[in-house]
Image (cartoon, rainbow, N blue to C red; front, side, top):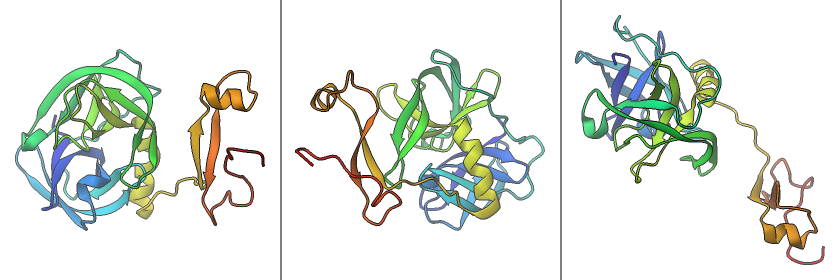
Length: 232
């Protein structure tokens, strides 16, 4: 597909795709701290663009795209949510092999995956399509050529993950406009309520989350209190 590009910064490489008339989206971990990135298109043309914004919390980055090739149209995004079992195609440059496509299905939704910043990326999409080094930043697309997610990680046995289309559509325009995205931050660590925790706290069933700790000086400091293991 002409809208998918090889992205390289000299220190590493991955995949990206045309987001709008003047920008390419990829992973933050693909561009790292680089100020510019080189992009190679389907017909072999190279473009050099400025890394206009990165967000380590969602692992997304935006690169300016001067003189977009006419055939490299921006990819549309899905409306709504993907469905488990839906057929998908992963497009990218695994091991630097241009124009590679692998197929699979959406094997899970609403996953939580780690970001380079150490926080969790919510609402991630899981697929069983083959994903290898070099695919990072490339699109997972539907059979209608609509972006379902942006590949973040893979390499396990038929288990790979992508950043959802919904999150990408929120974050990338802010990266283009201001170079960053401001996430909501509570300053707490949470843990699922297990059956043992539910029993210890006289809950009728295990549900919800428990505040495990509060970051000193954070927004929740003095408002919420972390869990205790004895009388408080």
